[in-house]
Length: 350
Image (cartoon, rainbow, N blue to C red):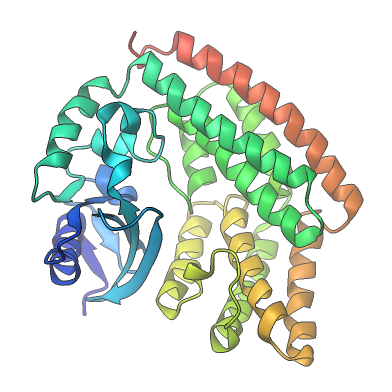
């Protein structure tokens, strides 16, 4: 089995998996790429530890679900999406996750009804217009405000860290969308580091690190935290039964994405930027351990979570209050900064 394929080869494999599993279903409407594949060149390498993000559109469901599996040596992460999300180009243009996908050249995988191709034609033309960039910014800012509200209501450290992670993610997305850049998850801070342009954006970037607590993390600390997180993840796989947040990531096929995906960021001098990803997996794993593991194993692995929380400075109620104050400042500053970019950027059309 090759460890490296091209983007074009991976897209073809993904299309085949969809055809095998979904295309004959009477409720199947179509499928498209979701993650980074939709904006990567066909000839670019696609390392096997990365996941293949897809959307499977069905007319039999009203809420999304996740289908994670391994197929032909690739991690397939498919969002099962209701067809109601695809009713109009206008709705998709205002959708931060989907607009850049349909503005790309090779996002549609299967389209038996022609519905997705028709939407793509409109979205490509309208994608950089100011009204739609503003709508996408407003969507991400609203989600950031909702995460901020969750942070202010957090009842314990676990709820607080999940809220901080979501708030950080949506604030990053708020700035990313006004730079007309597709959103990403694992590499969100690393991508933002590479696209910011002004001194004010650099200052915001450092405050985002402060929000997450990654501003002073050293490479050796990040390496140690990854080791501890992998230990917790591997053990959680053996005992996980009780539902926990983001449990779709607790699968053996996701392990390379955690390990090698993090090391990819290390190799790009992204130790600080990897903390979002490490923290996510540590908290998911420890939530499962706390719910299902015997007491002696909880003591071992939950101490690793406490070590992480100490490293990122989020281990006490006072730490949470400090984050709340910083988050309020960031929300206000992000709104002003992105208003300016939307008004002044030559890449955004009237």
